[in-house]
Length: 292
Ligand code: NDP
Image (cartoon, rainbow, N blue to C red):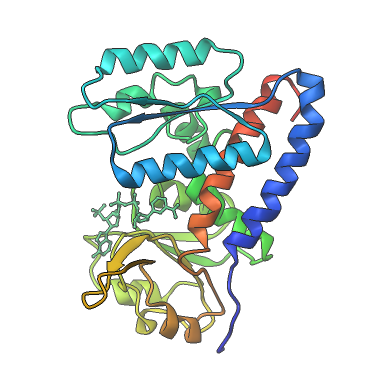
């Protein structure tokens, strides 16, 4: 089925941000303050700095107050732990996130586990991951939650479908597989040790690529009519012009001809991630006050 059926993450994110702005405007007089999000960043990795900037800008747009803090690379693990404890106790702060990856030498998992689970808006604390495994409501990781939201917005049926998730990271592949399972898909998780990846992918009604390798999903790997979700973000530099652009893990143009629906890069899953973070922050804000 040739198609221009594009899952427009950018449009959905913008619609959701408008709704969040209205929700905050309604809750704020009842709660007596704005929601608050604290993003902790260490060092000056340019990609991380760009992500943090994007998050703070989006917060400002919908009415979330930022409590961001930026630390030099020589900050100690103990100091970061102490800051997290302060933010846990700070009533103005509903969400805390540590921008990953941290520079070498930090124990990021130990830090994530210092975040109070009800403020863990990245959903990476073991308690929230455990709730996901149990199928209980809780704060869920933003990128996979964004994928689920895109599927539901376009009313794409998950129940009984065979979903193949390529990638098993704790940030994307693994939680997404659990979310798809909770939505009654039959789920296969593939990874770097999966033999004959193409044959596995061809079984998918819903194919998700979360690897980080340009053009790894070719049209031959896609069953006609499948829904293709591209989580990958890769920077490709044109050797002649020196200009760089973002591409996903899916060979977009040929795969688009085979798929029923597909996410573009940029403007697909990536556009949803920050908005899910805002959603999680506002959920935590409302939930703390019994207003969910
Ligand atoms: P990781 O590097 O943590 O995980 C990559 C996964 O891909 C691993 O499970 C790895 O397998 C698997 N893999 C690697 N090579 C192959 C291969 N040849 N065949 C099959 N599987 C393979 O990455 P993340 O999960 O953090 O991110 C994945 C991609 O998504 C990246 O491009 C990242 O930039 C992007 N991303 C996008 C976000 C967004 O907002 N849209 C947010 C987060 C990430 P193994 O476990 O065996 O090593």
